Length: 336
Ligand code: PCA
Image 1 (cartoon, helix red, strand yellow):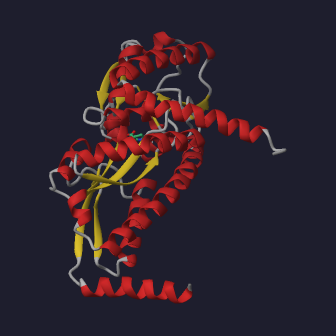
Image 2: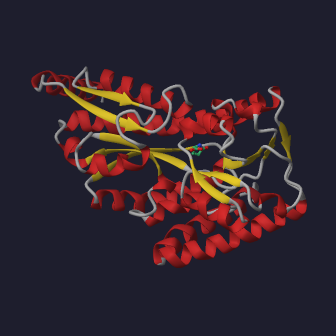
Image 3: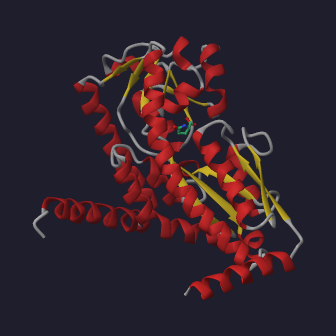
């Protein structure tokens, strides 16, 4: 067994050495290098480089600098860059099932989010493959809460205000609330607040903390509306151009990055909520009347979503609920 493992290692080493030409992939992302997603990506790139003995380098281009977030997926498909990171719920126009990520008030814990990814992954991989893309890994943002300049005491408080949006769900929710939606890239949220362009937003505490929103945002309501994921992928031709051992090294590092990223996300969720609190943002529970009204809007949104996506919506959510129920039953029967 040991001999076999050594032989395999030698073979892998030999094939990296034989094919000494090294490759560089450009990876574009719309998010910051310093955010937990960015740190995870950078560790992924380091691990790939080490595991392929320098045969593959992944060069990161954060902050929308090389390509704007909304254009990254198409650019990777077209081969303008080899790899990219996108927020899945921003891809719904081309890949409707990726909107499962931001159907409100279905997924409310990391365990739920993990179950959703499990049932969503096969369809996601298929949809990406149809567009010449290979999925590497996905990691969620922390739960989405409501940030507001003013306290939200009634549903009327949204009327006529401007809500920052980042995907079709946030845009539709703003509409349903009677607010005006305004798309603002994540890295420009602080600026938009300073310029008085937005009154509220649904996003994570991390995005609030990274944008140092506390001068303007005074209230953060932990509504756990959904857990949107970022997905990292590569142009399939670029991937298959790699040697077999390099392909394996990339996929192994991707599996590690996925596992590590989910842990980083949970830690970032807790740390950033504390950071908001320490900087004077009130961390509050949403008043009951508003909670009920938001859940009702969530149901309306869910119905619209299921109708627009059709059968694939069922293919994702049936195993999601089934797993949840059987998981709960297992947990309740320790005697077995
Ligand atoms: N931050 C990103 C997406 C979700 C999140 O928590 C944003 O606000 O754009």
